[in-house]
Image 1 (spheres, rainbow, N blue to C red):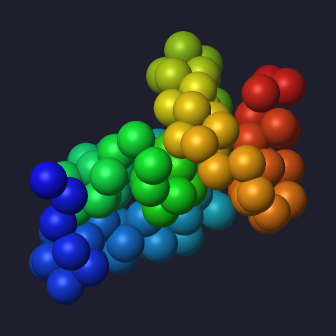
Image 2 (cartoon, one colour):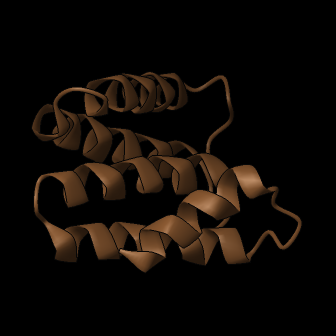
Length: 105
């Protein structure tokens, strides 16, 4: 059963995602383990099949993996994000455009 927003894992997941995004701007290699931790923590706290937060963290992880040359890992993270996003047909371009960009890589 997914945990609630008040769970410390959720907070840690969100903070890790934010830190990973910041690191990604200048050091993708350092961002990868932080973003992997973010995905793990968010998946522990939220619904791993439907959470937009998890999809967002997966997109960030995919960008970091592409930047470090791990195309296979990046595709897996990108596909996972897309799988979650497909469950939300009303998503704005804020989410769908980065997914489309990742799919074209």
